[in-house]
Length: 183
Image (cartoon, rainbow, N blue to C red; front, side, top):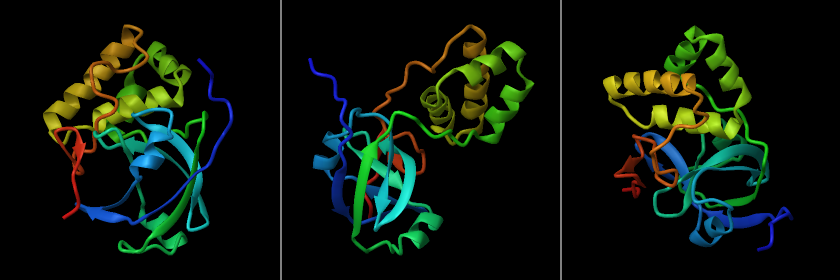
């Protein structure tokens, strides 16, 4: 088995769409198949020539999508019905995730051992914890997930377990682990 060591750029055109209140861009199947994982993948690239770095999300159908926030839309001069020209390459160095306030507070209040573990795990592992906590809108489930995260880390767990890494976990954009099709 040969290791994939060269960095190849994946190029494609795609049209963003709006689901709920989010503008997203679904990667074409051919582009998504070139990525090293069916789960999240850290990438850097350009959209209409504007540089960005992000983590692509799985769509639950063995593909990927990316959220295009207003800042990136403006910088790339992109509207919801425009076709965008994208070039991406996966990167090994993941950006830090945005840790939600409830998890951040629990980590700050946790014993030093847990704080040390959080700092010692990879950014990819931190993305998984954040993703698992964020995968629900139910306040009770979310509170329980934050508590379980701290408990699992206390016992030395470096990653959450028992959830499908290839599922779409954004509760505003998915149904049954699959990215909602735009209306």
